Image (tube, helix red, strand yellow):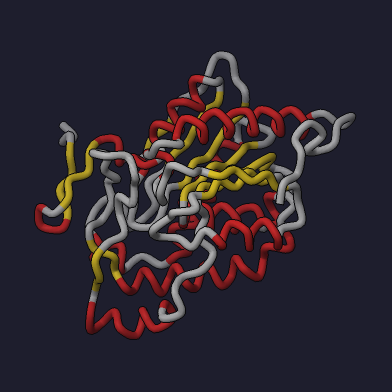
Length: 280
């Protein structure tokens, strides 16, 4: 029997079943498929409600647990960023075995991984749209030194549960491994060089009062990519907006955005963004 919760960090955190990888299964009235990617030190729990809502709109949804997550921060410290990306890409490829195109939704570092997917030339034209919630493009200036400090310090206090709604908890590590901070910084450097290659329509949802990721990262992404961008402001939420006050608006707008571009992708008579105004 699989236990209902996994204990990590010597009892400091319990991960529920909602923190496990989740797949909705096929939908009888299919609208397409969506890959959801959770954030740094987090788990699928932060996006599970989003996935369930998308499934109710007719989408098949895949929500993988990234390697090194949902166990212990020590295990995450041993996991390079290309393994996080590899899991996301594998989930995308599995959906593409059943669908001509897919959409991608992501939170925080999940947004960084999503952008790397969008820049992959072998996936060109196969991802119809992406919705990024508080995507992370840069870390503080001292981040490159994290890998050097990791053998000495090991970890620092975590960044989980940056949420304005009272009583809501994000299931994530209570410690952040410095080795993983260095890995994230390396991933972000690569993605910053790739932004100009991205032509996939983007919905970028941003919390002005984000306590983890600089809200200016969203503006930098919107300015650098080559495709259509729609901006969405989340005035009542902090970083984990998918669990916060503005979550219903994110769910509603992303479902409509994915439906819009799933249609235009397969319709040669209509150009991308024909009924959605660009807002940079």
